[in-house]
Length: 250
Ligand code: 13P
Image (tube, rainbow, N blue to C red):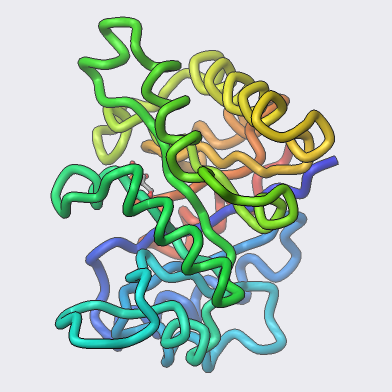
C-alpha cells in the first residue's frame, strides 16, 4: 500500500508573518493524519517555517531550485541552500514555471538531478494544457514530460521521487478533473514507469493529483486506485481547507 502524500504549494502567496501563522494553524489540525504532509512556502519563509516543524508530522518543501550549486546566478537558489535550511522536498517543473519562466523538459531533468545529488526529494509536475487534451494529446504530452524529467535517473533515485499529475486546465480554475479522468492518466503514468523501469518500482512511486482539489472533492479523487495524494494550491492557503483534504476519510 502506498502511503498518501498531501502537499500544499503556497505559490507566491503569504508574507513572512502570514506564512508562520498558517503553518502554526496547520500543525495541530493535521497531527493525526494517516498521510504524509508537506508545506511548500516561498523561499523567504522557508527557514522560519522550518523552525516550527521539528517534532511535528509536517515536512518542508520548496517550490523550485536552480541546478548549479553556487555561482553568479542572480535570483536563483541552489540545492545545498535549500538543504541547509531543512528542506526535504522540492517541486520541479510546475506548469507555471513551464509557461511563465521557460522551464523545459531539459531544465526539469537538470533540476531533478541536482535535487537528488543534494539529498532533496523531487516532486515532479507533469500535465497537459486544455488544447492538448481537446486534441487527444494528453498521453503524448504526459509521456514526454515523464521521459524528459527522468532521463538518466536510476531506479534507486526514482524511488525518492514523487510525481504530480496536474492538468493545467484544472489549476486555479475550479474545474477539477473527474476522478475517472485523473485515474486514467495516473494509471497511464504508472504503466509508463513500468515500461521505463519495472513493475515493482512503478507500484512504489506515489503519484499526486493537482488541480482545484478541495475538501469537497478530495475523497473521490483520493479513493482512485492510482491517485496517491494531492498537490494543493488555493485550498492549501487556509488551514481548515488544507486539513480537510489531509484528513480525508477513504
Ligand atoms: P489549485 O489547487 O489552486 O488549482 O493549484 C494546483 C497547483 O498548481 C498545485 O501545484
